[in-house]
Structures are given as C-alpha cells and as structure tokens.
Length: 334
Ligand code: ADE
Ligand code: ZN
Image (cartoon, rainbow, N blue to C red; front, side, top):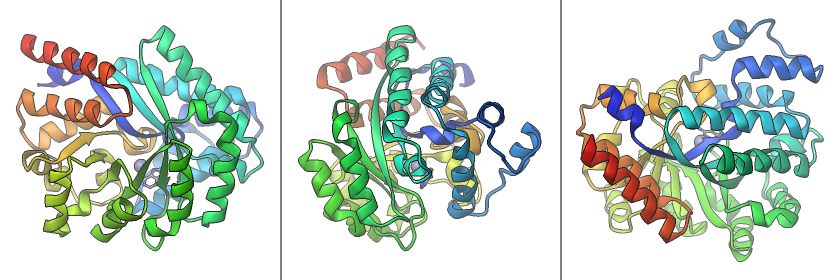
C-alpha cells in the first residue's frame, strides 16, 4: 500500500505556507537576515516542536515566521514546499498565507504576496503543479485588522482565490468576522474557515451560517452534533482534515482514535492535508500513510480522498475532470 500511496496523485487544500518553514531554512534565513532566534542549532529547533495544544504550537509558529523578511525569503519558503509537493505527487495545492503575521512586524503586504506568487507561477511552468492562494485572517486579532488586511489585498485580487480564518479558535468564534467575510465575498473571493478543530461543533454552524463558507478547515468536531453531520453529508460540504496535525496538537490522542476514515465511510466529503508539515512531522504522503496504517482502507477509499479534494478545490470544471481522469487512470492500473 505504501507504493500505491506514494504514487497516488494528490491534491492539498489545507496548507499554511508559514507552517512549511523547515528548521534548516529557518536557521539559514535567520543568519541571512541577521535575526536572533532562541535556538543555536537545527536540532534545537526540532526538539522544541512538542505541543500540548493549538496555542502552544501557534506561539512557536509565529516566532518562526520572524525570519521571513524579503520577497526572496517568501519565494524560497514557497519553492521548498513546492519541491516537496513534486516528491509526493501533489498535482494541485491551495495555500494559506497569513498576511497579518508579517504586516504587523513591518513587512509590506506586497513583499509577502509577490514572493509567494512568483514561486507558484514558476511551479506551474517548471513542476506542472497548479495552485490557488487563500488569504487567511488571524482570528485572535480584531475584525478591523482583518478589514484593513482586505484593503491591502485589493491591488492583488488577481492573485487571491479565497479568504480563510485561522489561529486561536476557542474564544474567537466565526461570527466575530461576519462583516469582513461579507466584504470579501462582494469582491468575489471564496470563503473558507477553520472551525471544529479545538472549538465546538457550533463554530461549524457559525462558519456556515455567518460566513457562508464553501469548505470547513478541520471540522472533525462535527461528530458532537449528529444533525450537523447529516447536514454536511446532504450539502456535500468539504472538510479539509489534517491527520498528523490533529495528533501533534492532541485533538485526538492517537491515530487509531482519529475519525477521518469513519467520516469518509459515512459519506462526508473529507480530504487529507498536511496543515503545517514542518512542525507536525509530515507532508501529504506521510499523512496518507499514517491514516492507512491506523485504519486499513482500500485503494478505492484512499483514492477517494483525492477525488474529494479535486471536487472541493477552487479550479474550473474542466480542470477538475482532467484531474479526476488522472486519478481514475491511476486506480485502474494500480
Ligand atoms: N495556523 C496555522 N496552523 C493552524 C491550525 N492548525 N489551526 C489554526 N490556525 C493555524
Ligand atoms: Zn490549518
């Protein structure tokens, strides 16, 4: 099954580009930009990646992002992730970036987006990987800050497909961001939001009702509300689930406790994603293998995760059909 998973075409819909900053690159950028970090080696950085919950991770994740200063840094970060995509047979990826993490420390919005976008353009040409960009608002900050960020994005709307909502979930419910999401939708940006990772099932309801989201990021806490599960099935609402992330952040104690395969078998539109792979110990292939090891699944079921992701992606219908054909061809010959 390992070979089958390695070669399976994959689509990633939940990846924070700042969360793909590997310790080696963090160390290199710290030296290149003369930024002090509280670690004296790559090994010391890796050793610090022990998390109790989402917040204990976020504290280290925002600190790590401090080494990103120049447009080339954002390019190098994104390019390194895209090379890993190639290795894992990821054919399409939809990437979150958190502008406020950078603009709040004086980095220009243009610097961030231009570096990321240039790498994505090069990846289409040189690696044959297609992509979309999702601008995510930090929910621990206030809505006015999100609105100011949307304002900064206006000259770049040709580069951005969607808006998201991430960071500290509990205590920062989706309804807090109803106005900025309404404005984003008016600008033809597609809405998605993290909900039901650590927060309650009610936050999933709020994301659907107040933010009109097209996908729920994580959403694994939906199982606490049977009626909600039924609604998610009937509306084919995609959930971008991140298995290794959920174990590292103790959303589930161990992979055998994870509900992703059960949700798939109940008919939910679940997908497999890596979230912050540099921090959680694995990219796309690693996530598929971890799920399959803990929950024996058929090749058809594993391929269904990719089919679900293609259907839930923000590409056009023709591109979706092409990718679905690619997966089906792989499956019949596997
Ligand atoms: N930002 C980066 N990764 C995140 C996650 N898993 N949940 C919420 N915010 C995040
Ligand atoms: Zn996430």
